[in-house]
Image (cartoon, rainbow, N blue to C red):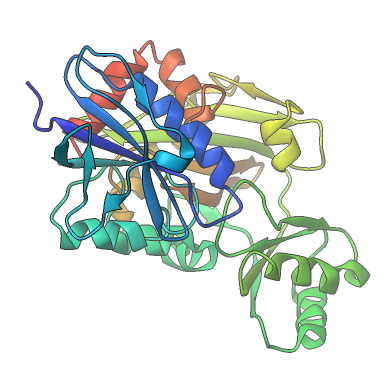
Length: 338
Protein backbone atom coordinates (compact mmCIF):
# COMPACT_ATOMS: atom_id res chain seq x y z
CA UNK A 1 0.00 0.00 0.00
CA UNK A 2 1.48 3.33 -1.03
CA UNK A 3 1.72 6.55 0.93
CA UNK A 4 -0.81 8.31 -1.31
CA UNK A 5 -4.16 7.55 -2.86
CA UNK A 6 -5.39 10.54 -4.91
CA UNK A 7 -2.78 11.63 -7.46
CA UNK A 8 -3.26 14.88 -9.39
CA UNK A 9 -1.31 14.96 -12.65
CA UNK A 10 -0.92 18.63 -13.56
CA UNK A 11 -0.16 19.56 -17.17
CA UNK A 12 -0.51 22.45 -19.56
CA UNK A 13 1.40 25.65 -18.76
CA UNK A 14 1.61 29.39 -19.40
CA UNK A 15 4.53 28.96 -21.81
CA UNK A 16 5.08 28.02 -25.44
CA UNK A 17 5.61 24.43 -24.28
CA UNK A 18 2.03 23.90 -23.11
CA UNK A 19 1.06 21.49 -25.89
CA UNK A 20 4.13 19.31 -25.28
CA UNK A 21 3.25 19.44 -21.59
CA UNK A 22 -0.23 18.09 -22.32
CA UNK A 23 1.21 15.13 -24.21
CA UNK A 24 3.64 14.44 -21.36
CA UNK A 25 0.90 14.68 -18.77
CA UNK A 26 -1.45 12.39 -20.63
CA UNK A 27 1.32 9.81 -20.97
CA UNK A 28 2.21 9.96 -17.27
CA UNK A 29 -1.44 9.72 -16.21
CA UNK A 30 -1.97 6.67 -18.43
CA UNK A 31 1.04 4.88 -16.92
CA UNK A 32 0.48 5.51 -13.20
CA UNK A 33 -0.51 2.29 -11.44
CA UNK A 34 -4.30 2.26 -11.23
CA UNK A 35 -4.15 -0.69 -8.84
CA UNK A 36 -2.69 1.67 -6.25
CA UNK A 37 -3.89 5.17 -7.05
CA UNK A 38 -6.86 7.25 -8.17
CA UNK A 39 -5.56 9.47 -10.97
CA UNK A 40 -6.95 12.94 -11.74
CA UNK A 41 -5.76 14.88 -14.78
CA UNK A 42 -5.67 18.66 -14.35
CA UNK A 43 -5.22 21.09 -17.22
CA UNK A 44 -3.74 24.32 -15.85
CA UNK A 45 -3.12 27.37 -18.01
CA UNK A 46 -3.15 31.10 -17.14
CA UNK A 47 -4.75 30.58 -13.75
CA UNK A 48 -7.64 28.41 -14.91
CA UNK A 49 -7.36 24.88 -13.54
CA UNK A 50 -9.91 22.28 -14.58
CA UNK A 51 -10.35 18.54 -14.39
CA UNK A 52 -9.85 16.85 -17.77
CA UNK A 53 -10.37 13.26 -16.67
CA UNK A 54 -10.28 10.96 -13.68
CA UNK A 55 -9.67 7.27 -13.21
CA UNK A 56 -10.31 5.56 -9.91
CA UNK A 57 -8.54 2.36 -8.95
CA UNK A 58 -9.43 -0.48 -11.31
CA UNK A 59 -12.17 1.58 -12.99
CA UNK A 60 -12.76 3.15 -16.38
CA UNK A 61 -11.29 6.56 -17.19
CA UNK A 62 -13.96 9.28 -17.13
CA UNK A 63 -13.39 12.32 -19.34
CA UNK A 64 -15.17 15.67 -19.19
CA UNK A 65 -16.03 17.85 -22.22
CA UNK A 66 -14.10 21.10 -22.28
CA UNK A 67 -17.19 23.22 -21.61
CA UNK A 68 -18.17 21.13 -18.56
CA UNK A 69 -14.87 20.43 -16.84
CA UNK A 70 -15.05 20.76 -13.03
CA UNK A 71 -12.89 23.64 -11.76
CA UNK A 72 -10.17 23.01 -9.22
CA UNK A 73 -10.61 24.74 -5.86
CA UNK A 74 -7.17 26.26 -5.38
CA UNK A 75 -7.90 27.24 -1.77
CA UNK A 76 -7.32 23.63 -0.69
CA UNK A 77 -6.30 21.86 -3.93
CA UNK A 78 -9.51 19.89 -4.36
CA UNK A 79 -12.33 19.33 -6.84
CA UNK A 80 -16.03 18.55 -6.62
CA UNK A 81 -16.64 15.74 -9.09
CA UNK A 82 -19.22 12.99 -9.55
CA UNK A 83 -21.01 13.92 -6.35
CA UNK A 84 -18.00 14.02 -4.03
CA UNK A 85 -15.28 16.43 -2.94
CA UNK A 86 -11.86 15.05 -3.73
CA UNK A 87 -8.82 16.50 -2.00
CA UNK A 88 -5.62 15.51 -3.76
CA UNK A 89 -2.84 14.16 -1.55
CA UNK A 90 -0.03 14.18 -4.15
CA UNK A 91 0.77 16.22 -7.27
CA UNK A 92 2.68 14.79 -10.21
CA UNK A 93 3.89 17.94 -11.99
CA UNK A 94 4.28 17.70 -15.76
CA UNK A 95 4.13 21.42 -16.57
CA UNK A 96 7.00 22.31 -18.89
CA UNK A 97 7.81 25.98 -18.44
CA UNK A 98 6.00 28.46 -16.20
CA UNK A 99 4.56 27.95 -13.56
CA UNK A 100 5.44 24.27 -13.11
CA UNK A 101 9.13 24.43 -13.83
CA UNK A 102 10.17 27.78 -12.32
CA UNK A 103 9.08 27.06 -8.75
CA UNK A 104 5.77 28.92 -8.63
CA UNK A 105 3.59 25.81 -8.55
CA UNK A 106 5.90 24.17 -6.00
CA UNK A 107 5.59 27.21 -3.72
CA UNK A 108 1.79 26.97 -3.87
CA UNK A 109 1.84 23.26 -3.04
CA UNK A 110 4.32 23.83 -0.21
CA UNK A 111 1.96 26.32 1.42
CA UNK A 112 -0.81 23.72 1.32
CA UNK A 113 1.56 20.96 2.55
CA UNK A 114 0.87 18.85 -0.54
CA UNK A 115 3.83 16.66 -1.57
CA UNK A 116 4.83 16.63 -5.24
CA UNK A 117 7.07 14.87 -7.72
CA UNK A 118 9.62 17.54 -8.62
CA UNK A 119 12.38 19.67 -7.11
CA UNK A 120 11.33 22.20 -4.48
CA UNK A 121 10.57 25.82 -5.35
CA UNK A 122 14.10 27.11 -4.65
CA UNK A 123 15.91 24.46 -6.70
CA UNK A 124 13.33 24.77 -9.49
CA UNK A 125 13.84 28.55 -9.66
CA UNK A 126 17.61 28.25 -9.95
CA UNK A 127 17.58 25.33 -12.38
CA UNK A 128 14.95 26.91 -14.65
CA UNK A 129 17.10 29.98 -15.31
CA UNK A 130 20.00 28.90 -17.52
CA UNK A 131 22.24 31.77 -16.42
CA UNK A 132 21.56 31.33 -12.69
CA UNK A 133 22.10 27.59 -12.95
CA UNK A 134 25.42 28.00 -14.76
CA UNK A 135 26.57 30.50 -12.13
CA UNK A 136 25.80 27.88 -9.48
CA UNK A 137 27.68 25.14 -11.32
CA UNK A 138 30.68 27.14 -12.59
CA UNK A 139 33.90 26.31 -10.84
CA UNK A 140 32.92 22.77 -9.90
CA UNK A 141 35.56 20.20 -10.76
CA UNK A 142 33.10 17.70 -12.21
CA UNK A 143 32.14 19.65 -15.32
CA UNK A 144 33.09 22.60 -17.51
CA UNK A 145 30.87 25.49 -18.67
CA UNK A 146 31.19 27.25 -22.04
CA UNK A 147 32.10 30.96 -21.99
CA UNK A 148 29.01 33.14 -22.06
CA UNK A 149 27.50 36.62 -21.89
CA UNK A 150 24.23 37.84 -20.35
CA UNK A 151 21.86 40.67 -21.25
CA UNK A 152 18.58 41.94 -19.81
CA UNK A 153 15.88 43.54 -21.97
CA UNK A 154 16.28 47.33 -21.94
CA UNK A 155 20.07 47.23 -21.93
CA UNK A 156 22.13 48.45 -24.90
CA UNK A 157 21.99 45.65 -27.49
CA UNK A 158 24.58 47.32 -29.71
CA UNK A 159 27.12 47.45 -26.89
CA UNK A 160 26.29 43.85 -26.00
CA UNK A 161 26.93 42.73 -29.59
CA UNK A 162 30.36 44.38 -29.45
CA UNK A 163 31.13 42.68 -26.14
CA UNK A 164 30.11 39.24 -27.43
CA UNK A 165 32.12 39.72 -30.64
CA UNK A 166 35.16 40.69 -28.59
CA UNK A 167 34.95 38.09 -25.82
CA UNK A 168 33.42 35.00 -27.48
CA UNK A 169 34.10 33.02 -30.63
CA UNK A 170 31.43 32.30 -33.24
CA UNK A 171 29.28 30.30 -33.61
CA UNK A 172 27.34 31.23 -30.50
CA UNK A 173 23.96 30.11 -29.22
CA UNK A 174 21.47 32.78 -28.20
CA UNK A 175 18.96 31.49 -25.66
CA UNK A 176 16.20 32.87 -23.47
CA UNK A 177 17.44 32.18 -19.94
CA UNK A 178 14.07 30.61 -19.10
CA UNK A 179 12.12 28.13 -21.17
CA UNK A 180 12.63 24.88 -23.01
CA UNK A 181 12.01 22.87 -26.18
CA UNK A 182 14.46 25.28 -27.91
CA UNK A 183 11.83 28.01 -28.21
CA UNK A 184 13.59 31.33 -28.90
CA UNK A 185 16.99 29.71 -29.49
CA UNK A 186 19.20 30.72 -32.44
CA UNK A 187 22.60 29.53 -33.61
CA UNK A 188 24.50 32.61 -34.79
CA UNK A 189 27.60 32.39 -36.94
CA UNK A 190 28.38 36.09 -37.50
CA UNK A 191 28.22 39.37 -35.65
CA UNK A 192 25.69 40.94 -38.01
CA UNK A 193 22.95 38.45 -37.01
CA UNK A 194 23.42 38.68 -33.26
CA UNK A 195 21.12 41.62 -32.46
CA UNK A 196 18.19 40.04 -34.32
CA UNK A 197 18.73 36.76 -32.46
CA UNK A 198 18.69 38.58 -29.10
CA UNK A 199 15.41 40.30 -30.00
CA UNK A 200 13.97 36.93 -31.06
CA UNK A 201 14.92 35.44 -27.68
CA UNK A 202 13.27 38.37 -25.88
CA UNK A 203 9.92 37.13 -27.19
CA UNK A 204 10.26 34.22 -24.75
CA UNK A 205 12.01 35.89 -21.82
CA UNK A 206 13.37 39.34 -20.84
CA UNK A 207 16.82 37.91 -20.08
CA UNK A 208 19.07 36.26 -22.65
CA UNK A 209 22.18 34.09 -22.44
CA UNK A 210 24.70 33.90 -25.28
CA UNK A 211 26.99 30.88 -25.09
CA UNK A 212 30.06 30.12 -27.14
CA UNK A 213 29.47 26.96 -29.14
CA UNK A 214 31.53 23.94 -28.22
CA UNK A 215 32.18 21.13 -30.65
CA UNK A 216 31.56 17.61 -29.47
CA UNK A 217 28.96 14.90 -28.90
CA UNK A 218 25.69 15.79 -27.19
CA UNK A 219 24.88 13.44 -24.32
CA UNK A 220 21.99 13.46 -21.88
CA UNK A 221 21.39 11.51 -18.70
CA UNK A 222 18.34 11.03 -16.51
CA UNK A 223 18.53 10.60 -12.75
CA UNK A 224 16.00 9.90 -10.03
CA UNK A 225 15.88 9.11 -6.31
CA UNK A 226 15.19 5.43 -5.71
CA UNK A 227 14.72 5.64 -1.94
CA UNK A 228 18.41 5.19 -1.16
CA UNK A 229 20.14 7.80 -3.29
CA UNK A 230 20.31 9.31 -6.78
CA UNK A 231 20.34 6.65 -9.49
CA UNK A 232 21.44 7.40 -13.03
CA UNK A 233 19.63 6.00 -16.06
CA UNK A 234 21.39 4.92 -19.27
CA UNK A 235 22.75 7.89 -21.21
CA UNK A 236 21.57 8.91 -24.67
CA UNK A 237 23.58 10.44 -27.49
CA UNK A 238 21.67 12.89 -29.66
CA UNK A 239 22.70 13.08 -33.30
CA UNK A 240 20.71 15.70 -35.16
CA UNK A 241 20.24 16.26 -38.88
CA UNK A 242 19.87 19.99 -38.18
CA UNK A 243 22.50 22.51 -37.10
CA UNK A 244 21.63 21.74 -33.48
CA UNK A 245 18.99 19.92 -31.42
CA UNK A 246 16.20 22.45 -32.10
CA UNK A 247 12.41 22.08 -31.81
CA UNK A 248 12.16 20.51 -35.27
CA UNK A 249 14.84 17.95 -34.45
CA UNK A 250 13.26 17.18 -31.07
CA UNK A 251 9.67 16.72 -32.15
CA UNK A 252 9.62 16.12 -35.91
CA UNK A 253 11.97 13.18 -36.17
CA UNK A 254 15.06 14.98 -37.45
CA UNK A 255 17.45 13.42 -34.97
CA UNK A 256 18.69 10.08 -33.75
CA UNK A 257 18.52 9.36 -30.04
CA UNK A 258 20.95 6.52 -29.45
CA UNK A 259 20.27 4.68 -26.21
CA UNK A 260 22.49 3.55 -24.70
CA UNK A 261 25.03 5.99 -26.15
CA UNK A 262 27.89 4.26 -27.93
CA UNK A 263 30.69 5.92 -25.98
CA UNK A 264 33.67 4.52 -24.06
CA UNK A 265 32.81 3.09 -20.66
CA UNK A 266 34.81 5.78 -18.90
CA UNK A 267 32.78 8.51 -20.62
CA UNK A 268 29.52 6.78 -19.72
CA UNK A 269 30.66 6.48 -16.11
CA UNK A 270 31.77 10.13 -16.04
CA UNK A 271 28.42 11.39 -17.35
CA UNK A 272 26.40 9.25 -14.93
CA UNK A 273 28.62 10.14 -11.97
CA UNK A 274 28.53 13.84 -12.82
CA UNK A 275 24.76 13.78 -13.24
CA UNK A 276 24.30 12.21 -9.81
CA UNK A 277 26.75 14.66 -8.22
CA UNK A 278 24.97 17.68 -9.70
CA UNK A 279 21.58 16.23 -8.71
CA UNK A 280 22.75 16.02 -5.11
CA UNK A 281 24.60 19.34 -4.99
CA UNK A 282 21.66 21.23 -6.49
CA UNK A 283 19.27 19.48 -4.10
CA UNK A 284 17.12 17.95 -6.84
CA UNK A 285 14.16 15.64 -6.31
CA UNK A 286 12.08 13.40 -8.56
CA UNK A 287 13.16 12.72 -12.15
CA UNK A 288 15.67 15.15 -13.63
CA UNK A 289 17.55 15.13 -16.94
CA UNK A 290 20.90 16.81 -17.51
CA UNK A 291 22.41 17.68 -20.88
CA UNK A 292 26.11 17.79 -21.72
CA UNK A 293 28.58 18.12 -24.58
CA UNK A 294 31.51 15.72 -24.49
CA UNK A 295 34.51 17.41 -26.11
CA UNK A 296 38.17 16.60 -26.48
CA UNK A 297 39.02 18.77 -23.46
CA UNK A 298 36.30 17.42 -21.17
CA UNK A 299 32.62 17.35 -20.34
CA UNK A 300 30.63 20.58 -20.74
CA UNK A 301 27.38 21.27 -18.90
CA UNK A 302 24.46 22.53 -21.01
CA UNK A 303 21.41 22.61 -18.76
CA UNK A 304 19.26 20.76 -16.26
CA UNK A 305 15.64 19.84 -16.95
CA UNK A 306 13.69 19.47 -13.71
CA UNK A 307 10.45 18.60 -15.56
CA UNK A 308 11.79 16.56 -18.50
CA UNK A 309 9.56 15.50 -21.37
CA UNK A 310 7.46 12.43 -20.66
CA UNK A 311 5.72 11.65 -23.94
CA UNK A 312 5.97 8.15 -25.35
CA UNK A 313 8.78 9.43 -27.61
CA UNK A 314 10.64 11.40 -24.93
CA UNK A 315 14.14 10.72 -23.68
CA UNK A 316 13.37 9.65 -20.11
CA UNK A 317 10.92 6.87 -21.11
CA UNK A 318 13.55 5.62 -23.57
CA UNK A 319 16.16 5.53 -20.82
CA UNK A 320 13.75 3.74 -18.50
CA UNK A 321 13.05 1.08 -21.14
CA UNK A 322 16.75 0.63 -21.91
CA UNK A 323 17.42 0.17 -18.18
CA UNK A 324 14.99 -2.76 -18.24
CA UNK A 325 12.53 -0.97 -15.97
CA UNK A 326 8.76 -0.96 -16.28
CA UNK A 327 7.52 2.61 -16.69
CA UNK A 328 4.60 2.07 -14.28
CA UNK A 329 6.91 0.71 -11.58
CA UNK A 330 9.31 3.58 -12.28
CA UNK A 331 6.57 6.19 -11.76
CA UNK A 332 5.54 4.46 -8.53
CA UNK A 333 9.15 4.72 -7.32
CA UNK A 334 9.15 8.45 -8.12
CA UNK A 335 5.82 9.03 -6.38
CA UNK A 336 6.66 7.06 -3.25
CA UNK A 337 10.14 8.61 -2.86
CA UNK A 338 9.43 12.26 -3.66
